[in-house]
Image (cartoon, rainbow, N blue to C red):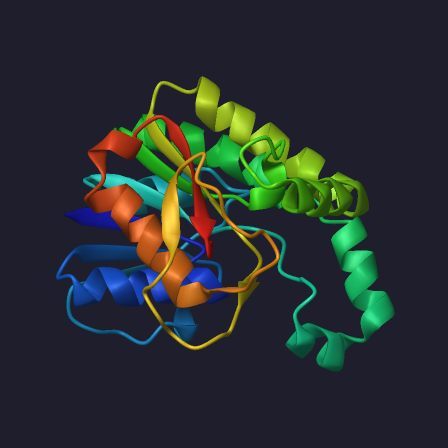
Length: 229
């Protein structure tokens, strides 16, 4: 398949590109800094910005599916805590900006103009109302929704826009992501019960996004939870 990946230099996006190439798909990577992506066979690299609709259209033309791996650039990983400091990380999470709401809106417009019918969006388990989770994990999700209310609001706008679109969409909601050991061993599906605070590797998240884009037709127009049970 011909797959366009937006946010291809992020922690998940890089793994998505790698996984697609492993499976012999034709990949187009869109990034604000394309120079950091190493050229290789079957990989086409474009400069683009989700705040600029026109910059994405050319790279999407001819694609069978688009995978969105965009999101706020800072999180609560230990790496960010060490490099940026706790207060700076807190500030970034409480002020996530509008990369999801504006970016996804522009992405939907670009898909329409480029003639792309299928979109896979990476979101997060904290967008769930928790009804499919255990009681303890419902409390965990509600707590995180309260702490990150601004980020949740921005992602909610993005999810609603995708759901209301005419595209064959899939929304993937991973649990907390981590640079843990590669495994390709996880649980995924509509309303699947997962442990939201149990770390999921970026490799596993990427594999699920690739499955949603290329090999799981029953997931179309559904929200998929992915994580450890």
